[in-house]
Image (cartoon, rainbow, N blue to C red; front, top):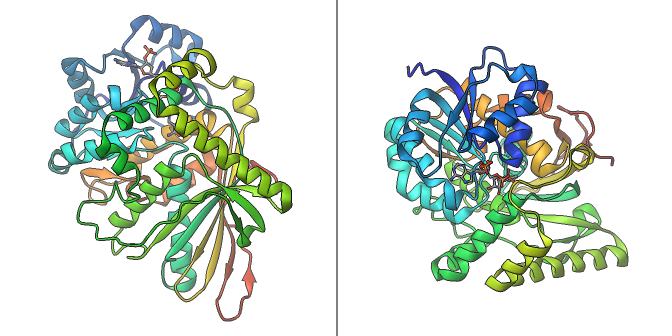
Length: 431
Ligand SMILES: NC(=O)c1ccc[n+]([C@@H]2O[C@H](COP(=O)([O-])OP(=O)(O)OC[C@H]3O[C@@H](n4cnc5c(N)ncnc54)[C@H](OP(=O)(O)O)[C@@H]3O)[C@@H](O)[C@H]2O)c1
């Protein structure tokens, strides 16, 4: 029993996401008897944040720590059971904190979507995390909680209805409304910068299993959606920008789950573009736009031009109105080897990357602290689906505006569709 001063420290409280998260914990959601503190590198910014949050924040302590200051991070990690970090790009500022957490047995959740950095952290610190008992969970925001927990939710219903997991699952983005922050753009640009300087990272970006343990042994070829007609949704589909991190996280979950979902498990993600000629045109436009932006980001002068003139700077992001008007609606379909099918819907209110992500990250941190016993999940690098149990899904539905809904189950032989609503948050997007 560590018995530390705080349950949770929010490191990066003054980031774009961190401010929304702190407001959520101070003014929108109360977790009984939660002791927590706000941390960051700038005392004046932290004090300004406290003032902006109103009188409910008066008693919340503040901790000053720079991500390069080993002593300050050590002292912060010794005081808390768990750190939530939104200090990014993580590949630039995140390593020392992960190292300290792994040394001191402090649990950790973050929002990184940088696979090359996650792989480095696993390689360097997993041994220490296992011996100290630190549970490290990356990707606790829009990437990759809806995907990873969506698949877990689908697979648990597949087990219940068919007695086996689905060996194929696909996720389709039906609707997604939101914007990007400077912090997210900076993280994406840094990934391209690292990749253009290092052929090993470029190779890694082509390997869908790059986050799986080295001895994973998976050989199944994974599908990347470019432009294609999706019969299941009677709609054209184009690439989904978050698929590259989400698919890697889901495939790592498949490797870590006891006995796998399936040894030949296949998973892909795409954006739905609608039916007919118009749908095809939209899918082509999504695909073209994705290719052009990836091509441009590969070159340093283009990155400079984009950040200088077009893209938001760190600290900037969608306005409060845009966050409130945002939402998303994701559909998943799974198939078993015998041809049984199951359909699931995951929704969220607020814009995916910030309004919804901040609530997801807060509930993920609280859930790891409160709902996940160390005997159940020990030290190591986990994915959302392998770290959290169904209590996080309940929290997200009850307190974070998300919906996880079983839409239909069809048996291979009878093709009888049985529709069951399991858990729905306030509808975030219309059918
Ligand atoms: N997974 C998802 O779905 C998702 C969604 C949104 C964001 N993200 C990721 O989350 C991260 C944060 O995004 P954001 O838009 O909120 O970023 P942001 O507004 O640019 O904030 C970055 C934070 O890092 C802090 N920081 C920078 N250097 C530091 C240092 N040396 N020591 C301590 N703190 C330092 C900044 O402190 P100051 O405030 O003092 O400048 C700020 O609080 C990014 O990596 C982004 O990619 C992921």
